[in-house]
Image (cartoon, rainbow, N blue to C red; front, side, top):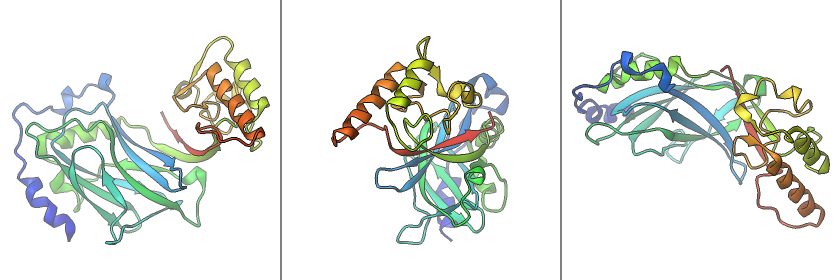
Length: 269
């Protein structure tokens, strides 16, 4: 099996003196691992595995549990269509009725900083797709597939801590960027809603993700009014919506994010 070919060099990675134990991975650092789902311009659905605030790692492994709302896509070799982005050599393996197992290592002495987009994989909606049951979560499972991959550089403790402090995805919802009243269009009404809401200041999307209905009652999600998708809802987002509306009315191209379909993940944090 492919995973066995990979374990030989992985197990040869030496333990690093003074590796960080779990007690030193402070809650103040807020280490976490989560999945961010996107529509690409051609309509493909890409899921990015994100590492935030993790210390240097040498090797590790984890499972990605994929709900039955999704189907994995595969490459020409029959493997999950997955690739690494952050300097790791690794392997992925499909686990029937579960998802994928990711095992990685780096030959850099002392390990590497893997924060940011760690790896990505592609999905399709299944016939059972339901946004309320479309969660994709990273899980630490010390089982027969992963136990040999989780012992280096105290990575077992580090990943344990990160996963214990990570939010759990509850669902994944489609929305149109800039469609504040959820009528299927981005027009002057949406612009006016954003301008009215932000006249006393901007909103950070992450801060209002559970309370946004009090500000934008008809929006599908907190991210819908964030026209430039920078994480903030401000007067400038209304300006972008107005430009989009003007371009559409004049049959001109518009190269912003406005009007595109994206996915908003709801987490329990």
